[in-house]
Amino acid sequence: MPKIQILPEEIRSKIAAGEIVERPASVVKELIENAFDAKASFIKISLKDGGIKEISVYDDGEGIEPEDLKICYKHFATSKIKTLSDIFKIVTFGFRGEALASISQVSKMTITSKHIHYDSAYEIRIEFGKEVYFKPANLNKGTLVKVENLFSNLPARKAFLKTPRTETFKIMEIIKGLSLCFPEIRYEVKSLEENKENTLFFWEGGNERELLSYTIGLQINYFKDVFLDSPPYSIFLLLTDTSKTFSHTKYLYFFVNKRWIKDEKLTKMILNLLKPYYGNLGFPAGLISIKAPYHLVDVNVHPAKWEVRFKDEKALFFSLNKALEELFDKKIFYYEYKKGKLKIFNQIKEDLPLDYTKEPSSFYLENYLEKKPLFISTNFKKPSYRYLGTFLENYILVEKNEELYIIDQHALSERVIFEDLKKNFSKSLSQNLLIPVLLRITDSALSEFEEKKKLLNSIGFELKLLKNNEIILKKIPSIFKVEDIKDILEKILEEPFSDVEKLELEVLKRYACLLARKKGDLLSEREINFLIEKLFSENLQTCPHGRPLYMKISLKEIETKLRRK
Image (tube, rainbow, N blue to C red; front, side, top):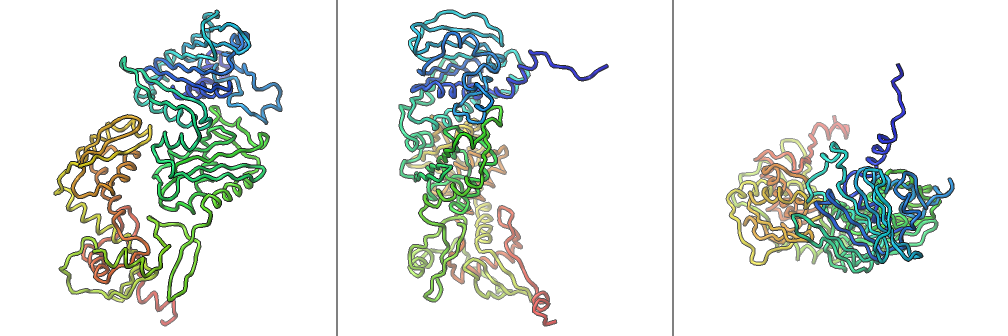
């Protein structure tokens, strides 16, 4: 008996819908993109229970003609493609005729629209793919799409949805990203949960810089921009400089012909290009917008249109690189000053930036010679080693038992401080801040905030959620300085932690890294001997993150290499 069969239309349509409509945020994305294609200047979104119960999207665009309204919910019903060649020069956001069809298969959907060339509005209702009615309606302008009871005909899919609060955060991530496609449009987003209406997002229109400042919560002057016309591509960069970076890329948006893209290949290319400028400092916030001839970009490669393919990736790479060079006005250099001579090397930044704009002598004097070493005890044993010197102001050279130790001063300093913090953390008391500190986190981090808040409270912090991704820090353990812990907490809140002990250790590791000596720091001989003594007396092997503290070469290895034996 044959095993292969042609699936019935009902099952085929549900499978197709599942590729496009994953959760309420997917519905919002498709409807906002339809509003873009309708040339809207105002978009209003209303949510009930995180969009699970109801999503309503209104736009004041050109509207849908009555005859088109009757068939717009059917599969492959589109006004964007007429011939095969149109697929390879897509200029609109929607084009397949699958969005409304997919949404209608898994919900009860009502579309009310008044086309600019008609005197009356019309309304159509579709319940799980079946038309219920088509009739005249009241609407002054544009289109209103209401989607109710999402996935109620697919209980298995609905079971995978998160809480209304989490789904709302997912929707807000989509809205914030899409709003950057057309920042001149006015946006209003409201949510109704437990009979309480909240305004989640309100934007009167403006430019990309102003909108990024509003959504991320950064001052406008953090952003630098540059426009480069490098045929066949035009590149617009709007990024924070190295003074404001993040441990994640959630505030970094990529656009191709105004379409928001989440393409893994493009992301890797851009992050590799950013590395020489930001190094280990983290990632910038901002946007990278690419404009390309439509025939050189294929957007028909992903069901939800998140990915693209470029015909000439090499040319794109060089254009992006050139734009970054113009943005920073120079390449990143490493300066080494010795005996009155200045040598310059190409160098990726390490950990924290060093200020090389001053003469080395004054730089060291101001930053290190007058600074007291951290955690130094006066009780030293008679050394069982001999300190030989420091190589390139980063690696401590030590002779011990006919072996040469090459020690990473930053890693060792970090480990010593980490051990001290661990020992003293349990003894520290929580202290109230005279002036509470404002923290900002992303929508995805907000969905797990309550759980993280409990963990952080248990180790001596006190945080309170305000609104619009803002959190107040009211209390910290006395072992920390508030100006240092702010960035650490913002990063911790973005990352997954479920265990109190792991969270506590991670906070201490990052604080130790912040306090530790950096590459290029000039240490006193007293501090160096203190660190070496700690290394040997406590048998330290790795930094808190697991990297080795040293390497060693035996006398035998040296003599063998030099052919002395």
